[in-house]
Image 1 (cartoon, rainbow, N blue to C red):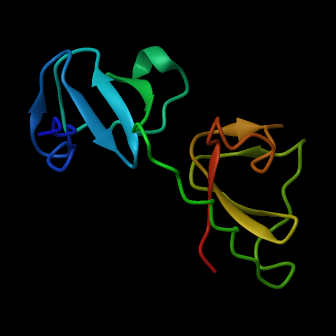
Image 2 (cartoon, rainbow, N blue to C red):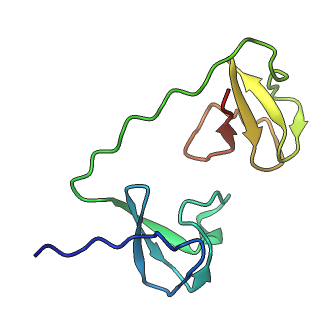
Image 3 (tube, rainbow, N blue to C red):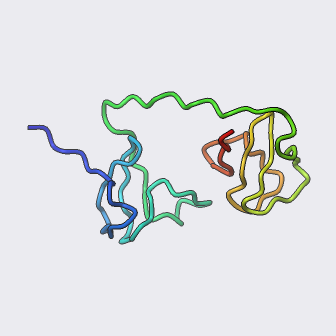
Amino acid sequence: MAPRAPTASGVHTASTRAGVKVVWHSRVFAAKWWNVGDPPDALVQHDWESPWSLIGPVAGHRPRAAAAPPRWPPNTYPDWSSIVSYDAGAKVERRSVGYVAKWATRGEDPAADRRQRLADSLGG
């Protein structure tokens, strides 16, 4: 019988001890220290801010292609500008895609580097 993969079904409510491994959105994470309710993929500016460490994808799993961001008519939100300071929660448009700022930012293109997750695409 093959070993069961760890799961993170209760990660939002359960406490997790250091060293525990979980599968979250087809990726394996390990808890760096004891935590309660911190999702493994929570947005943080620095890796040391998260109680989780990404180990890698689930073996043999092929991730689905990312869905294209929703598009809508121009001027739904103000155009993003590299010289404007945005507070967390600010909504902007970049190439007909809407974004909401995750934290205060200036000059960081929301569409440039999705790995940093500066902003989430808004549903249309």
